[in-house]
Length: 279
Length: 321
Image 1: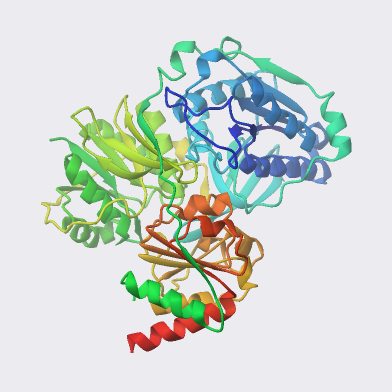
Image 2: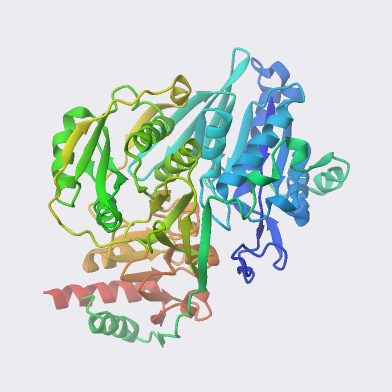
């Protein structure tokens, strides 16, 4: 199986995230890292690879399964790919080009789709494109659906449980999808786009062996022209949305804190709620 | 005035509250046209429901051929309606499915997409201006769509539904659905059990519990019922298997913005704040006086929730008589 897992490099959520003068997210002046929610996508990709290798019926090419981490982002985004390689991904592809900066989800999905097509042009079709449920910065949760649309693949998204099974010369995937009003089981045959939630299973930590091995794994860097995307199609100027203004939310003013002693806490709490007319 | 398409959010024809909010927003922007994708037999009830909130037109799309497939067919229906009606905007609820439909629709129609709007205003004639809350609620952002038909997903509680009678002229619309939109099948579906409490997204008051509950949510539920509130939980409580994921508040759960949020036994990590920081009034009960949640509160009690919550519940019930 040929698996591509999409990973994003994001500003650390515990750092002071902010915007640049042109309203883009500052991705350079703030410490960055692999978006935590993409670790679940990496984990599921590795589990699918391990299962296909051990699958008695379906090990058509179990040992031949290759997982590639694909990242679109600035120079420093290599850190996100390196973490994926340390966790056990086989190869990395980093699409980096100044013209991409400021792209919205529409532009990013265009670049990702073109890179997936280039990976497939190596001779082996891409069976699975795996994504996390959202990035931890923009958190739109739309790129997997956009990729499915652009690549004309079935979308099997927001899975909290993932099952795969060999079926003929392909693979069947089923996920559990927890919606607002129902829990569904979604099924489709590869090739497809899969996205997984943080309920899908704890992501592994890189082992010492994994960290050492990652140094020797192939990591390719592609520009827009390498994947056949015109610079005029992406970037801040070409985005189909425009941010007009950003404003830091004023910090909340310090409230009243009481310490409970022999029931005084509950009394004070009810008094507060009553004063605000919640009772 | 151009049409504003509103995708009706419903369960088997029962229209959900966010639809009323979307119709109210649509009236600010143009003429609301509701789009009902569902069983034709349920259309009459839906038409009645959306008429009360100002729908001038209702497109009824029978889903008998497509209901067994995920997301893609609905995006095709909307894309064909966009072509037919050339609307001023398309409004969709900001659920997981709603955002995915919107994402595909944006690509299909060559349109810009804005997700999770907490407000949408008409702007100065150059298309709607949206407000979003980003970076765990620490920034607000104003944005616009600059290309194609503005496609906007809107969070629950972004507007107060206004009852206004609309014409609700009904039009059946037969969309043509491609083969490739029917590849991701809904193999099984289990409706979520009603808890009898308000929906988390829609509630005016939310009482939530975390690690500090030790796994027993009865005290959280008791206070929630005394206040007429929804029950929520932190990720720590969900990961411990104490409560289903549907109750999780935070970055990977629901984002709530109620009038009152009561956090009990929740430390207040950034991931949790992302889901509740924009609540109007915040109250916390926690044993640890250094828990970061206390930085956010309007009122905090340093104490054991196992004694504070039941005592507060009893007192509230007594006052209610």
